Amino acid sequence: MKDPAFTIVESARAAATGYSFPSGHTQNVTAEFSAIALWAKRRWVTWLCAIIILLTGFSRMYLGVHTPLDVGVSLVVGLLTSLVCIRLFDRLRPGAIRGIILAAMALMLGYLLLAPKGSANVAEFDQHGLESAYSLAGAALGLSIAWWVEERHIRYDTHAPLLGQICKVVLGLAVILGLKAGLKAPIQQLVQGDPIGDGIRYCLIALFGGLVWPLTFPFWKKIGHSSKKRQRRMLNMADATYPPMRRKDRAITDPAQLEQILDQCQVMRLAMAGPDGPYVVPLNFGYIIQPEGRLQLFFHCAAQGRKIQMLEENPQVCFEMDCDHGLIAGEVACEYSYHYASMIGFGRAKELREPQEKEAGLAQVMARFSKGPYTFEPGILSQTRVFMIEATHWTGKRH
Image 1: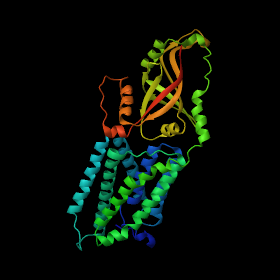
Image 2 (image 1 turned 45 degrees about the vertical axis):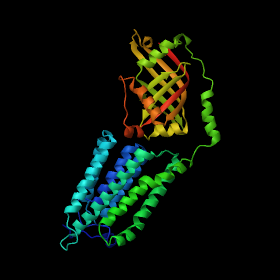
Image 3 (image 1 turned 90 degrees about the vertical axis):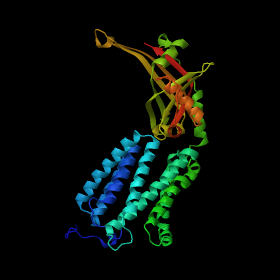
Image 4 (image 1 turned 60 degrees about the vertical axis):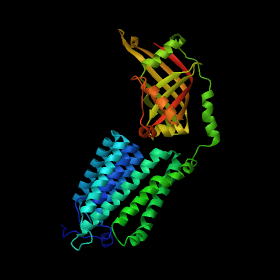
């Protein structure tokens, strides 16, 4: 029911679909941008998303199309939606996620089949519901097709330097917004104003965003790359002379004991260097010692993240692992010490891109925790990044 004390800004009336509870604009923006903030886990991204969410809610009240209660409830509902979806999708396989999308499409199609059309009794709210349902169904259909084609046949590489990523996102959004506005009139004319036109339009936009625009991704990888001189300097780090261990009496030189440390440790800490400073992350790993004595370490991770970005900028890494922990007690503080066995090494990380290589690397990681044989679903394998570290120098120490 409209509040008689509430005055709407006339220029906003066309975009408003009526007085409703809660605010659809605020709820959708909150769900989308809070999910981005939770996924990115970067402070500046979180602040940017928070500002966008708050400005959206403020604009709905400023224009007079929603009350503070509408906006407040929308903020809570949108945030809860993103939290639930992220936690749920983290635990689901791609096939299950697609099943949820298809189920949502079936519900929307059921609504479209049962809802009255072309009747004078159809209220404005129902008409807007039809348009929204067609839009959502079209977008879901387009995204599902793009996702399936990309996963089965293409597998785009989304990685690029920061400048390339910014240009790719900004220009991509600009083109999509242009298509959203430019396709509306011709499609509505083609379908003679039927709400199905919104479904067709959003399906085409989703197909463009999921299949056509990613064809430009190789170009953006060239924007903002380090200079060749800097890249050569990074690669030459592997040839640096490593200083000898200070406490040679604690050094482990027996290859069998070094391999024992590798067997006992289930977690290694991987150190990387970037322009913003060093970064260390713990990882499960697998390993192979080649006949000529070369040590190769394997680990896997998600498709994106800080670790991926730093490895692409500088593949030179340092790794550490330790085991056999135990306290050495003393009568006074300075007599306390600690038992441990550790390994520290240096090397160069290389991504394994071929499915057979990825499966072999993942099998080495799995071999640490269970007996084979191991099978890996193609859908999950395509979304997993697998790396091999070719160790150039490593030492062991026991205390």
